[in-house]
Image (cartoon, rainbow, N blue to C red; front, side):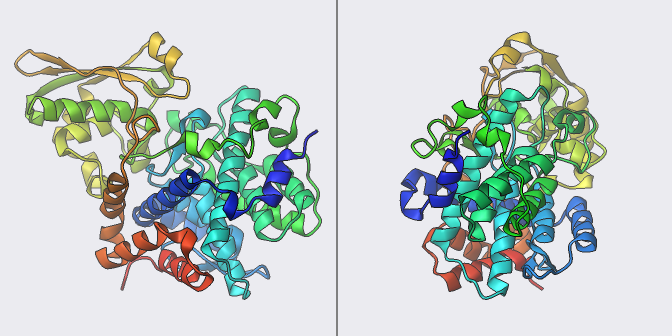
Length: 452
């Protein structure tokens, strides 16, 4: 049994973070808060806040304010409400090799604990927060890879982000490596090993499990601080899992594996959405000229609901309807995340005329990548085709800083106001250089929500 992950977690410093790690963290901070802003307007976020308030009131561990709303809860409660809020709009950063998302659990969890510590007079600066984010991402990604390699079914991200959150919060609370080991073990044991394909087959507000992964990790760290035992976390310390930790500290999975999403829907739909966007522009088409669409893609993607979604949850876990939305609207932004969009007759027509083909070849090669091939039949009988492709936003087709900024404002400006959004973008884009007081101000801005 190795303690390498715990040594890493206990001893990591800001100065050890390479520039490319800090770049990812800054981009993810901005991107995540933009998603939180638009997420705060959803029915799912409202329900999650009510549930979190009922279960996790203010405690002796300090007062944590919820993202975008400012409701005062315990750290676990604010982590839960924040994670569900971000997860309510499927546009946050992700990791294709783990088939999931980490930032949607990590940011609300670590921000909740930081806010609670602030309320107790223990302020944190931006460099310390950057170190904790890097720790949480790296442990989460590696635990996720280990879990996917050693478990037979496809678990949601909450299962493995609970481990990374637990380790980082334990360090955040001043824990040594033994406390970190126990926290990770508790987080792994109690983490929500929920079935991802169930939510894809039957889309609801359950989403990616981070709404329970985040508070599970937070709770695990506080339990470990109180002397509760739970090590080892097998995803971190098991013999079969050791290959995923062999280069810890010398290579950064968060740099290699983090992707960004230009559209608020399942990543599996993105190569198809990108393809139709290119075809519409390349051929100068109007949606009235589109008769039908055929999408060849990998097996799990064909299981996505989406021809006639009745809720925004079904929209998020779809291909046909998001593709049709791009054809008709030319974007999938905040204005498309409404119930009115679900009734748009032009979008509904094209969605119903979209066929998904389960292609064995794309299933075979969609390992760590997401492949699709799109052809479009026009009303004049012509067929236009796009080359097979993977999504924009992966490290081989990265979004630019300007594209991240544009997406942030598309989501945040209507909710927070343009001036407040610009200030948050400036702060998150440079968060690791903030003093303790300036970082406290950033926390305030992220929990204020829409201006009155």
